[in-house]
Amino acid sequence: GAGVSQTPSNKVTEKGKYVELRCDPISGHTALYWYRQSLGQGPEFLIYFQGTGAADDSGLPNDRFFAVRPEGSVSTLKIQRTERGDSAVYLCASSWTGTGGYDEQFFGPGTRLTVL
Amino acid sequence: GQQVMQIPQYQHVQEGEDFTTYCNSSTTLSNIQWYKQRPGGHPVFLIQLVKSGEVKKQKRLTFQFGEAKKNSSLHITATQTTDVGTYFCAGNTGNQFYFGTGTSLTVIP
Image 1 (cartoon, each protein chain N blue to C red):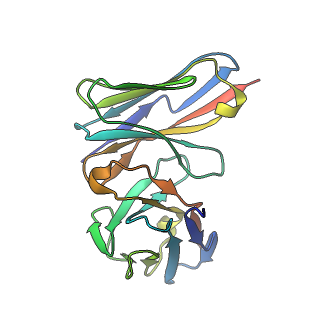
Image 2 (image 1 turned 135 degrees about the horizontal axis):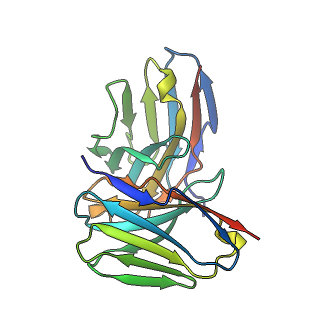
């Protein structure tokens, strides 16, 4: 079956602009995670959804970052007033339940965001 | 705050040599997962350890979870060129996964 997909694969934007990054998880997976990965670093947790609700958004760096998952499947990460420091690869992962974090996470290919 | 560190950051080995990466958490973990990321790719799940002192093997790979559930290791026996990539541990304390800094493995043929 299809894996996790993310669009766009690359996004170049100017400082101050608004961007949306989309994640299509594996069908049936209730848990969805967003991570940010900078070059040479491990993925940095941003937010975790269980179904439609954000069960943990403590990793979002500031209020310019927001994510939604209105129907419990597709999720959108939204970044307002982008800054050069936001440049990174944004990874999405999904898992069957996510309960207690005991499920294997399936990662998407990521969206490479570049803020000029 | 929660921190997960890995050493070494980089490792170059001759094909056939063994390789070990170590993962250390500042706090006790519920479980730990290991992922491999090939250059230009995304993390791919390898294994999960849950119990204190647990040891699991996958062919040439051996994974251990420390007794205090604060550290873990991955050992690869007789490395092959297909082992090239960055190995990440990811510690879980509930809803969040804290990824380690990763160990980048280069295997010289």
